[in-house]
Image (cartoon, rainbow, N blue to C red; front, side):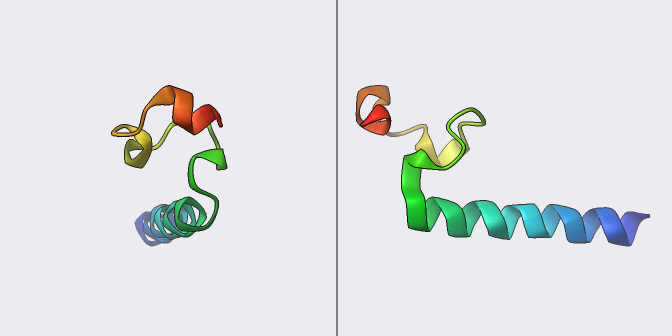
Length: 46
């Protein structure tokens, strides 16, 4: 089970990184990844 969980975690990390790079703050605003922390909320909404 550790290998499967590790693959799942890495998949989620890669997916989140690629999505953040392509779509920016518009990608899953509910989760609020650490990448969006430095940005201002007003700019992320737009």
